[in-house]
Amino acid sequence: AEQVWDACVNTTDLCTDDAFMDTPLREKRNWLGDGSHAVLGALAAWGDTPVIRRYFQLAVQGALGDGMLRMFFPGGDFPERTKVVNTIPQHALVWACRVGEFYRHTGDRAFLADMLPTLEGLADWCDRHSNVDGLMDRLPYGCWLDWTPTDIRGANLGTNAFRLRLLDDLAWSSAELGRADAAARWTEAAARLRATLASRFWDPGHGRFCDSLIKGRQTGVASELGNALCVLFRVGDEAQRAAAVELLAAGSPGLAPATS
Image (cartoon, rainbow, N blue to C red):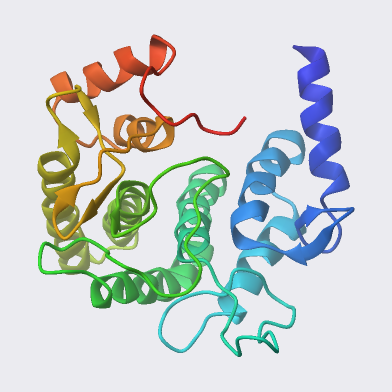
């Protein structure tokens, strides 16, 4: 256990400069998705440090006008080949998870209030890219969740699960800041999405959650990541989540493995 702790602390230290780097060797920009893991490592190892707050502030400064966040900031993001902004919607949603976690660690209400408009803008972006069922579908930019054969096409389970986490956090954060009307609105939105995820992505024939829907139909691909997120974010009823846990505990037969 001590060796694992040392390895985690050393890795976090090596990936920390004036921001959280993807890696000190290949990629030294402040990434939202990759850097989010360093937030947890830094909190565990050193507590509330200025570099963590800088990680959040840089992401807000790099927000696009439509509510989406750049996948890294600062740094050039208009490749000559495509002329399209480099961003990954899933990275923005993972970054959003860290906001609530950091607030729970610090209790800094001023920080939470500063972050709330960016989180609300991101939630609005998700709404504008949702289909008639209320699911984010066929997203622009580069979509990525993990180096594993999940099915990212169409309406993806993992992406929508992280959106559910965003809605849950917005409801909780709004209540913390005394914004009762907003809290009720986000709570209702989260309840609708949670119900849709449970009904549309559950595969009763295999007792698992599937990865993606294309034109409303399950693609047949399922993953450890998708099922674990459903357990973590309370998607489905107790029996569905128990079945997902049992499948994961059994070595995940029939599930695309998550990278370690």
